[in-house]
Length: 266
Length: 103
Image: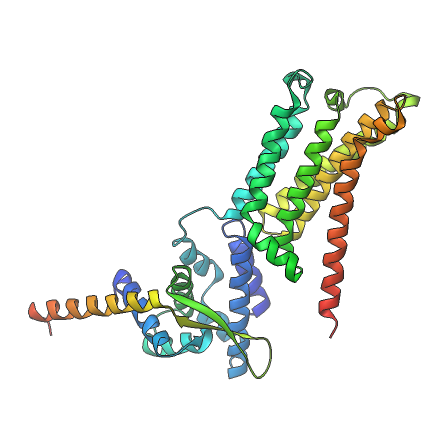
């Protein structure tokens, strides 16, 4: 490792998964500062790298002092488990139609509220000061989507046929199959985003929750298509929560991007 | 020096440095390295981080002439108590060792 960039990158990769995003960011900031100070004194990046030791050693020393699993890892694990439970709950084997829907949705709502309150203080501070800090915005967006998505699942019925992907496409059901494709894309995005998130990439979690949003919207759209012969208002009702959640998520993304640009302008 | 002994002593020395005045990370590490040349810079960083996590030090941001705000460390009341205890333990150990005949 000869340059500051290599050092910091290796430090980030060594810390990923074992430390929370906040700790990783703080440590990277600290070492960036040390490099700056050292360079000001006239030392070279190579000297500084040598004097700090390898990033792996540093992370080993820090890890030996850790006592508990970082909150973000727990959060991600919990969120993934909840989503899988939602998807599993749609399977015909669970006889979803016979179960009172409340028994299914109340845990989902409870988990979302719990996760929201865990990060509540930070989110409030963020909302008031409006600093675009990606890894802080993520729990808020995710919980909003989970809340809305569970409402949508709650209001739609007959979801077991969604799992029946192998059904042949007939002319009248092309729209239904397009929705199923979106559903698969949503699942894929969610899994991809979660996988990347476990490797310490904050922005990929945004992808995961967008995937979740698409998934929920596709579910609602599929159900909507089945109600086309019903009254238009009744047919539209499941779409509304999901459309709102997607819209909220996109608005939030837009605001973050806007604030980021506004900050960069000198 | 034995690793365990070193750990406790380094903590005490770092806290003592901070008790005199608040400093930012880099010159603090450099000063400690002057007294403990065989210890790695990153070991000091890890100790500093631990002290902060346990509430023995606190961070404040100070103005710097150029560039972004610098992160300064200073000792807290809890840190002062811990330091006083550590120094008293150290003195006790010194007197015990001396009374054993090791000068």
